[in-house]
Image (cartoon, rainbow, N blue to C red; front, side, top):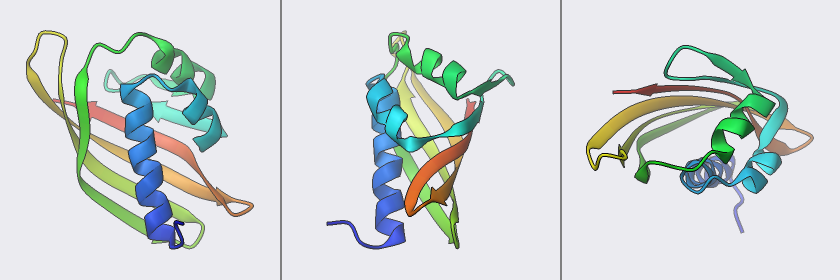
Length: 119
């Protein structure tokens, strides 16, 4: 059983990355706040519906892994910074970064914001 805030957020972070890699709309239905927003690498911002549409598309990357994960908790708010590594559709190794903001609603952590960059 996960007990500490840190452990809960570590698991949610792993779930988020796994849901991206496997296009798991079901998991995102559970962990995204209704007013979720995501800043994409191209500079666009999408709401929860737009993000879910992006995630539902066939995945073209492989081996998405989070590294250098830093989780900071401030009462009912948490910020997760991390880097990513993955293989693109041409078989090239790529890197990126993300910052996710989580907020606790009635005792449950939900993602409220994400910012993604790719190199």
